Length: 266
Length: 271
Image (tube, rainbow over the protein chains, first blue to last red):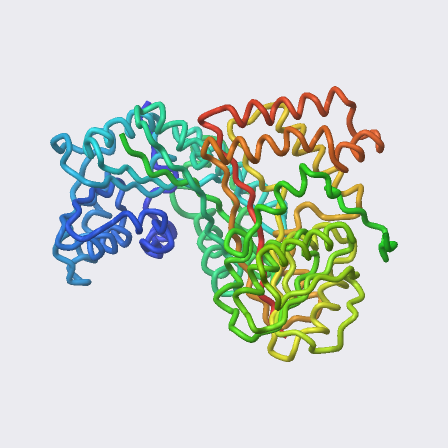
């Protein structure tokens, strides 16, 4: 079964993807990058991380690939706006990006494997693209481990619906904890695995992150997917929205989304 | 031993299997969020300093500033003094003291620091209010606490699930809050701090050595430490339950796919 991207590319989804930078999403990789390296960024989305990486490895060449034509166009426009020229974006398949073996020094993927039905196959394919001595770097969420405080009925429902929908779409919402095992199964000899978190707690952060999920709950492919698959009904989605809006208003509000990370070599 | 001023007990006790993890702690792996705010000459109180490894690191960072570590246990205070002497750090002293009733004047310190302390206290808001009293106007109270309900252990097993459930029961039976990490910001606000920056970080155990060390520690700790005594004495587990949990930790440590995250909440609360 081909997997579906659980979140889709509604504005309320891209709002969070555009916030991503190499620093808040790929800090574990940065010490391993140096000028002149060629990097493939799989599932590059709107390209904010990709372009950051391109600036760090210039004059090395960076290619971002994604399955969505619309975000490829957005990423290309952003690169032009930021005046970064050693990066390009293409439509391609994560399982078979279409490059010769050993084409890259680094293959990077942020929050991609969690959405794939065959993560080990994808990692094995990326392993071929870096060849011996190259590095595959991946970071994925672990939604099962998300902590949202203060808790509320709508927030418990949110986690339950998200986990079930992501699984119904063929993904692994607790991918973070599985990355090391997947990389070992894909044939990598040396896998370093670490963890980091996104933490949202200030008034601005809660307003942004909670507002995003409040909107996703009633609009976006999260909402339509949950309704179509029967994972949630309209009342449940309304409760999720109310749960997030309540959390935004809670001055004691604090949440973390843990991530697993791997640096894999063969 | 001095009588504790309140009803809570320290869940872990100070068995060798507990100290094995406490002496691993450094300012870098346990107080990184605080380090950018430290300067030479600052005075620091470290509440619940245990064997003093973090305290002595902090003393080196702020020297010639004066650092005081306090703990309720005279035994670990002795250990901390020996540790400071061994490292040749002289701007630090260790005293037996009560986290709720500090024997210091108002505004006596630039920073009050506490690592994995509030989770063991029955009245964390009262403790934070007392710590607030002894920092100067504009000074910082810095706290980092685990959030046990958020622990991720992979691959999971019935034995590790039992550990997580039993840990919650034992910790709560001693008057503490095992999910303190998520509550820190709310507690600090309730204690009267107007400006509270909260954050989070993790301990991650993944390499063969890390798994052998951390998993081996819990393998031993559930059979021999205050935790085991409480679990058995309070009727929360049988010896067979503890042996099953110990076995699960040993298995986890041996699994090359094994990966574990201990999430922590952190606050920097300004007076």
